[in-house]
Image 1: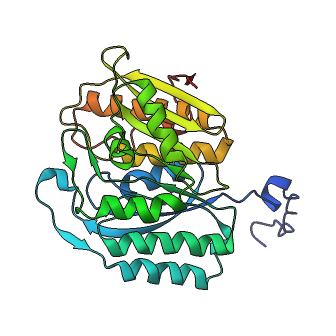
Image 2: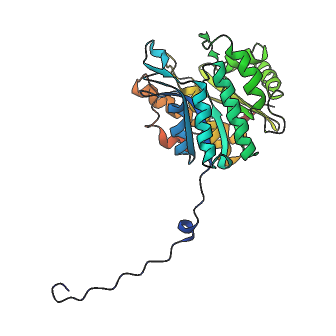
Image 3: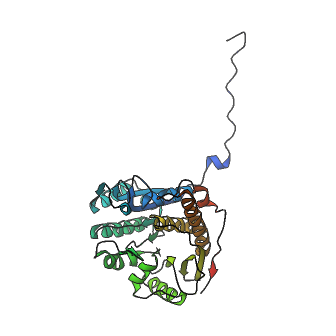
Length: 315
C-alpha cells in the first residue's frame, strides 16, 4: 500500500473484438528473383510493393549483387540452382506450401535456375492446386536486345511459359516469344493471343504486354496491354523523359499487376491500378532526378494511386 491507498484490483480486460480474435490472414506469394543491396531490381523491386498491398512474400534470391548491372560494375555472387531447390524444400518441410497463393519469377540467369523455378511451381501446386504462377520472362529489351545467356529464351519458352498462368513480357520479349513483329495494336493483340495459347490449360491465361510503343498511339505516351479469355484492355500513360530508362520498372509492374489481380480478380482493374501506381513511381523518380526508382517514397500510390489511368477495352 502506497500513500494510504489500497492496491487497486487488476483491471478487467475488455472483450476482444471479432477483428482481433479471428483476423483474416494475408495471402502468400513465393517470389524467386535476383536481389541487390543498393537500389531496386528483382526482388528488391517486387517484395516491398507486394507487402504494401498486404501480401506476405517469401523471397528466394537467385543472385545477390551490390547493385544492378546497369552501372557496368558490381560485386556479389550468383547462387547455384541447387540453393533454390534447397530453400523450397525447407519451406515445404514447414508444411507451408499449401498456403502459397502464387509464385512470381523474374530474372533466371541459368538453365538450372529455370528448371529450379519450374520445379518450385510444381511442388507448390501439389500442395495447393489453385496457386497461380506469374512468369516475368526477362530476356531483353528494345535497344539492348537479348541480355541473358543465348540459350535462356528457348528454355524459358519451352519450360516456364507452359506452366504459367500469367506472363508479363515487354514488347521485345513478346516478339521474341512469338515471332510476330509488334508495330500496331492489331499485331500486339495477335501476338498476345498466340502466347496465351501456350500458357497452362485450365488457368486464367493472362498476358500483360508492357512498354508497348506502336503506330497509331498518341505521341509521348506508353501503353500496357492485357489480354484474357474475357477480352483485351489497354492502359495508356504519359511517357516520362527518363534517360536512361530506369532499371526495375518491369519487376515492379509484374509485382503490382499480380498483387492487384489477386486482390480483386479483375484483370482490367488490375491493369489500371498497377499502371497508375507505376506512373506515380516513375514521376517521383523523374522529379527527384535519381538513378534508382523511388520505391519507398511512392509507397502510398501502390495501394491507392492519386491519379488513375483507366483501362480501355480493345478486344
